[in-house]
Image (cartoon, rainbow, N blue to C red; front, side, top):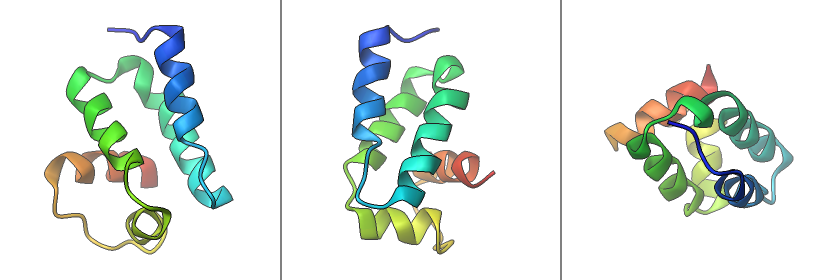
Length: 80
């Protein structure tokens, strides 16, 4: 599929959070998975970026279960 460089840059900027641990995980997903991700995965990732840091930290760092199946796929890849 491929993403436009401007879109990738915009998402990279949105990955910058208040917690370094989240920055690393989110930017790693973007680098590894965004180039081959389909539009649905990118949309789910963008919706995740709308979450507040404490909520993201619960999912990504504390291992809290994710109810939303689209988020769960992204979270599984982020943790892996």
